[in-house]
Image (tube, rainbow, N blue to C red; front, side, top):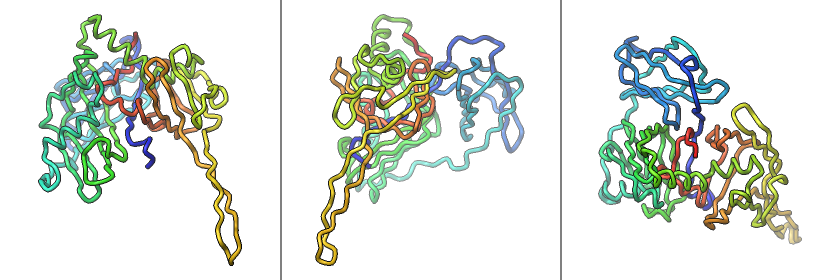
Length: 360
């Protein structure tokens, strides 16, 4: 995997604006095997600050908004996650949870490699991040995080049976991060962050606002959004890159976005259609065949886009894996696997995440 993919984060995004009681998803959560109600299960809109808990009879009612693509997550200790994609207002929906029989116990850490303290420090770098906001972010339940280092393949993996409790004082959020997948692949027997070949972080987040509308918190959130991939994609869709201090590059040269992208409005926001991608022509190779020189034409190799923030001088890498990118009106990706990030955007971890219902 190329070096510019050494760090990336998947942004899973949906919108949660103004709602009414009539625009709600109501139902009951039951155990698949026993048909008994599951109490205290978390029911929340993915990556938002909207969520509820089931009552003793397993009932829940969560507000939605029509014509918006949202995913509702149902999570309970000891059960597999249940996802309701593209959720719509509905009454009396029955949700069955399956017992998670594959919950992993913590493996014994081979002391020939690294201690738990060393692995936990490495985990936090790739989970929380290393920005100024990360320095003010704490994990409240570190003991619930299981860590394992595969010395043969140089991989650090992590999992948690409970949501990871994250306290971000700079942005004024408490976050329940339901970790689905975490992996860091190193180039050698190492846990030094700069030795990583790639990293993968994926999960479901629920935000609780504890900012109390303090001016400092409001300022920090605004700054994070302005420098975020969401603001870049929104600026791209609204043809306002220069207005928001972004420059787009292909093959190391600044480009006009209309050469590479076309924009279409959708009920959820925008579709950014990729007209073409940057390519690099590899040089031809001369080979000897039957004592004769034969020229083999070089192949074309796809290249990533680069983004520069002219206000901060931060440079980011975009690897677009789809013919069209779906975003909401705030610029949040609606399909997480459409873009991989490197550079500055790739360094943004949980400490620099905002809920998708954030508004300035």
